[in-house]
Amino acid sequence: MEFLADMLDLQTKKEVKMNCTSCNKKLDTIKIKIKLAFSVDRFNENGTWENVPNSIGIPEETICEECFDKFTDIIAEVFNKE
Amino acid sequence: MFRFSNQLILKVTRDCNLRCEYCYIHNKDNYKGEMIDFELYKKTIERVIVERRGNQELFSIIFHGGEPTLTPKKQMIKMLTYAEKRLNENSINHSFGMQSNLTLIDEEWCQILSKWNVQLGCSFDGVGDANKKRTKTIKEKTFYNKFNLLKKFNVNFGFLMVIHEGNINNIIESVDFLRDNYGIESIKANYVEDVNGIGGEVSGEDFFNKVWKLFIDEYIKTFTLREGNTKHLLSKFISDYLLVSKLTERSNCGSKICGGGMSIVEMEADGEFQFCGRYSENFKAARVENVRDKDFLALKQLSRYTDFIREKHQVILDAGCDTCIADGICDHGCMAFYYSKFGKWGIRTDLTCDIHKSFYKYCVINIVEIINAIYNDEKMEDGIARYRLANTALSIKQGSHLNELAKKYKLNLEIDKKDRRLLLIRKIDGKQETNT
Image (cartoon, rainbow over all chains, first blue to last red; front, side, top):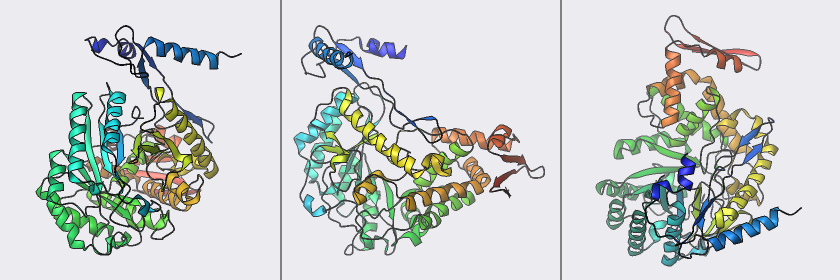
């Protein structure tokens, strides 16, 4: 629920002036929030996966439609290859 | 850049007015007059704001060097004023700190530090001849005058001592002096690694026996722990040994795989930042990025961190750290110092292993006394550790036998029927040892 609330900006529904964190264009129609959740483990000598300190994070960007299109195009091009 | 970190160590300059023998920075004379540009500084603060927005955790900005008090006072006031205003406007929870050799501290500096509540870390190696490796011209009394000034202006200050062959024999005396004269309750003692081959380094065994062991012994007797690293290691030891949990905390130094440019960002005056600030020069292998660089979703930073993890992982496997007794408490060596000295990644097993294995073994032998000290230590404010340690001690006091743990670790834990003290019976190398 906390994640969903954060994604939906439930706590900041007030009008907030924002710029695209990629191209810096003023956001006044649509803004798209993207987050990358990541965590790194290493396979240790004891035969178990061990979490790496400092390796859990969720960086985020709030971007305009154009930047989001560029982002999805690149991801699709690189990772959808057969 | 600042999304994962709670701290910016801002090296406003690598220039310094002292030439400490053990300083890890190569070719310090090359940085004479270096100073961060105010426009770059503003850009850095603005980036902090963008990347920390909505994050409620405290973000610390530590002015570091070289020697940060080489910054003209007007410039420092401008920097603090700008940061304070912009961070407050954007509700960024923040604090300021500074690490200084104190030599340039005067009344004006004290006023600045006090006004902006800048917590000052003082580099001071102790009483007597302890500071001879830092300066041969500045007299011991000069430092004491600086301490008095800091006290007079109510500056919040603490001490970092670098332990070398020039001060290792009088650490307790120095800590007593600071307590008795300036009310300092605790210091931090770091061991030196001789990165530049000048000397001064002490062996791992000596460091443990003459520094951390003395603080453990004192803790057992007085329930007062006066050294920060010892306290941190004791918490990790208890978690590892009695509670069977490994701490995967956020940390720069001190964890199995250190910050690597994630938990703390240490930025040079030109905006460059490496895996950490302990590299003796700007090595390509350790570079992360520049504060001016764009880094969408922190992808560059994440990519460099995974590069670092891969190197450290290999180093850990080569040294056999995963199966070492001290794995749960060890910092697994400073990769920055090793790379600076040898030009490749590795661990100083002669230093790191000796210190941490000695620490762990000593704690095992004295486990009951240590638990007793923690239980009686009213100043142990480290939340989780305090809670866990207190509960462990309490369960022992109440007569719980901790049978499951004992079975798992082939320990016999019993309460003495007469005086209710814990008996710990541990088999080491087939021999049975009992501690009371």
